[in-house]
Image (cartoon, one colour):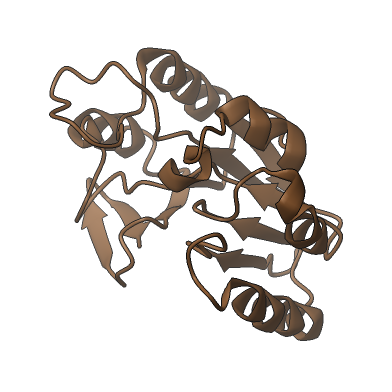
Length: 198
């Protein structure tokens, strides 16, 4: 009945970039003007450490719906996914959230177990999540947005991107957008009638 807006920021890299707090401030100032229905950070945000409680609280208190995705660098320095879930206030490492009728499905692209993994950070959506995604796509009426840190298509895509593209393609009539961070590029591509945006 009305447009739905989600304010999105990706790859703040607060712990390694000198201007993270300034960029987050600029984002939140823009959100104060546009007043979206939710705000979403797409990973590589800030270590879930006590030292970062101020920046985490700043994001979480800026909106009724502050949503998070776990990035590959968020578990650097000895931190875990459970640390992110607890300190950021996530319902889980992957989850579904209704935003004014838009069904947001958040995935965790940091699963171990890829048969083609050849070193470095994991970039894979494991079987448990794939089965959950299939069930969500089957059950939900849509419209659906899928969010992950690592891309599901295009540059730097997860190891099982083709599997996920097939799953999402089967629900293309419901999936209005798949969005990611990680790549630090701007790219929009279409695969099996689904739009993927970096």
